[in-house]
Image (cartoon, rainbow, N blue to C red; front, side):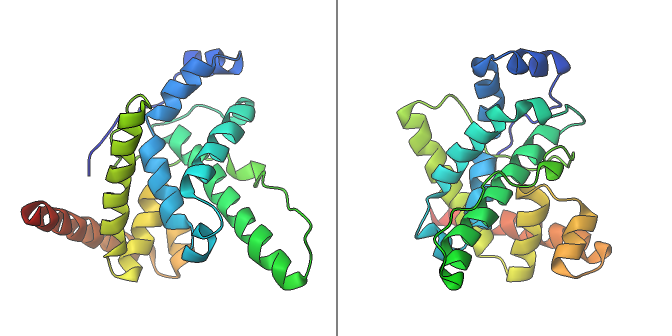
Length: 211
């Protein structure tokens, strides 16, 4: 899995975007686009993917983040990605409620897809990131293929390791949050992440050798 820049967002760039500079926002978003798409893929259930494409969630996250950019506060390395991941995961949760829990209640009423505004400004960790360049048609295709490869590798992990990868790396949760979500001790989260990354590296080498 490749890496790309997720350095801290400068206040000058934030001010430009808040003044309506969409090009600056596009460049910022492009740096994390592929990683965020992996996040969407891993956070969406198979059932939800029959209703909504991960790319649709990604596009919705882009639009929502630009609209709400005034709420983003620049911070340490990785804070912009963590903010985006929160928006994406909140949207996925609300889509799941919209399609399935409303059916169960027998109601067709739409739910708000805005998510929890309090979760949008928390800062998080940096993590492995797929490369991301300008979205020309050929580049988008290559990005989609790379995303598929990463998602396939993560899904080959045992569930307890895949969960830690999804939460720690692609949802950018803290160790404490991941421990609460998975119901294990913080030390177990750290140990599982190490094991998961080692196994992913092994799987990737095996796939490259077979290819």
